[in-house]
Image (cartoon, rainbow, N blue to C red; front, top):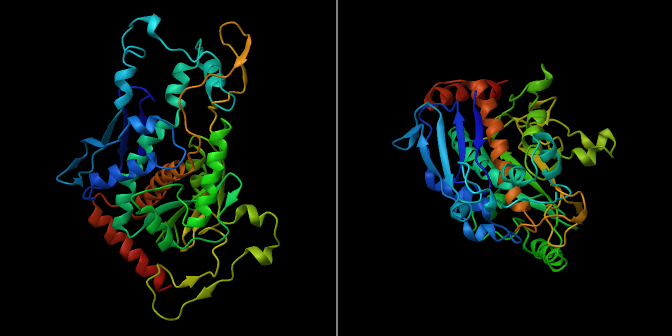
Amino acid sequence: MIRFSTAGESHGEALIALVSGLPAGVPVDVEFMNRELWRRQQGYGRGGRMKIETDKAHILSGVRHGKTIGSPVAVEIVNRDWKNWEEKLPVETGDAAKHQPVASPRPGHADLAGALKYNFPDARYVLERASARESTSRVAAGALAKQMLRVLGIEVASHVIRVGRVELDRTAAWDEIVAMNAKDEIVLGCVCDETEARMKGEVEEASRTGDTVNGVFEVVVHGVPAGLGTYANWDERLDGLLAQSVMSLQAVKAVEIGRGITAAASFGSAVHDPIHYAQADTDRPTRFTRPHNNAGGIEGGVSNGEDLIVRGYLKPISTLRRPLASVRFDTREATGASYERSDICVVPAAGVAAEAMVALTVASLAQQKFGGDSALEMKRNFDGYIEQIRRF
């Protein structure tokens, strides 16, 4: 079973990802991991922190001669900003006078709930761990999962379908999404240039008014065979696991599988895809097909052979340059919410982090189903299963 955990704070010395359960022999391309980290930092409307950090993966264990060796993989991403915070957030007791408190909680952030839960006099330590900077570790872990999935011919990518009031009005093709993610410059991660230009206007309006802007990203998993997940137990359903993984990301407030939201306002005849069968040979994992994939590749908690489609709905970032009303922790007096440099729009970056979470979820289920202590054994088991369902 593939498991992962993260450690580190937003302004701490480094971020850590620890991934266990990967079979031996999975090729690991560090430059691919670094590009994934780069993609997470891109997007119009990112804050000043992205000008400081150049995230790079440093693999500490579990990979030798470019391949996994079956033991846990530990990855470190150094925070370059640490030099500015070393005296403010020391590991030892240090000088309390240099502590930089978050004196008033930000509405919509974990500040107040976290301070109450852990009995902190201010929200500094809450901010340090609740920050979306933590998703850097997830992207590093997800890059490893993606490289395992590639052994099975499964790919994961994302794109942005809405920023503020501007929405992509058509379905994006897989090849379009792949081409967009391969660009050397990522503006807002939309496959349509005209729509992206209007999305950019939404970000600019928020910037002018000291506000932040929300949006929707879509993650697509291509090449998934039928049979991942199960209807047999509630906590093993693929849609439930994907929803939890994406909902766990900072600022995500809703998750949609396929056309779930549209389906809630439609008749069944307009939602459920007819099932067809391809008599001729095909490169698909199964010859059973559906014309629209409204179910997002999942029926009854099980993948059905179509692409997995998962959307995340982001609330606007909580830190505003024009702060909302709040209360000081120390005096309980009314004041404005604390402000630290922040982003205006993070929808493309959130999509990259969601790719990582989806890849980790799918990789874990694939490893459970196909087994194998080595990538060769896992691929042999996978190929046998594909042959089985193609002959069904």
